[in-house]
Length: 295
Image 1 (cartoon, helix red, strand yellow):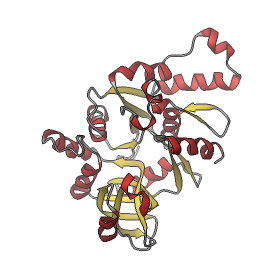
Image 2 (tube, rainbow, N blue to C red; image 1 turned 90 degrees about the vertical axis):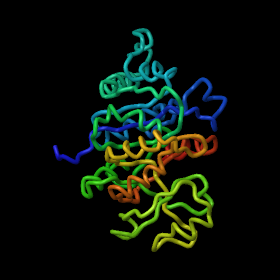
Image 3 (cartoon, rainbow, N blue to C red; image 1 turned 180 degrees about the horizontal axis):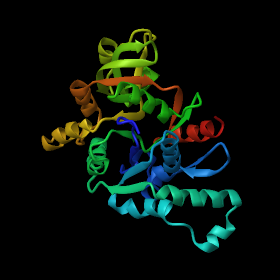
Image 4 (cartoon, one colour; image 1 turned 180 degrees about the vertical axis):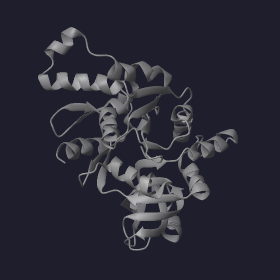
């Protein structure tokens, strides 16, 4: 196995899901159903894990709130009762067995106090054990435009450059206030970028002044896709902010640490040939149900 091959993935799933309240009071957004192209109703987290496995990932950590640990363990580590299993269609019996098989690869880690996305990632430090890893959002699912899955595309770039890689997509300026953005210079036009800045939710004025990228339209920018291949140096960056109590809107963020990681060890951006579906907001979840089924 190559020394720089990534075999671990981290999926933070410890948020409150406030934008989908009150449903998230009783059902985690990572467990919301999405109809796959084969017609099966799969929890979001299952689809994310399938994406990871498609990229050659061997071990997966899910970061959850303490009260939710048993829910995720029940999904992946406990088969249904014999009575329920017998009532399943043959296709769903296969899915049931696959869930339990996947469960052998999953570690459920708790974030004891919800202090932000960056803090949730930091909770995986001991488990990651000084290896590079794939970081995946807990409320994004993906569809590739080519044979390689979106996650596999990002990991293949990592193996070429041997430093951190951020998956990117092109967005219009009206979405800037919702996303993290990057700028830099192209190594391969409209594909591979040498990243020179990572910035969280920029104002349009700031983006136009500082985040323009050659070759994009006047109001087009590169935003974060939701797949990251990261070196373990990210944990040093996160630890520095946590120890110094550096917060944004009361929480420890990931994006500021990504920019620190870029400064310390370099970073490449890759425009993913595919699409992500955001299930973390009501209207986006509704559209995801339609688009993902028909992709």
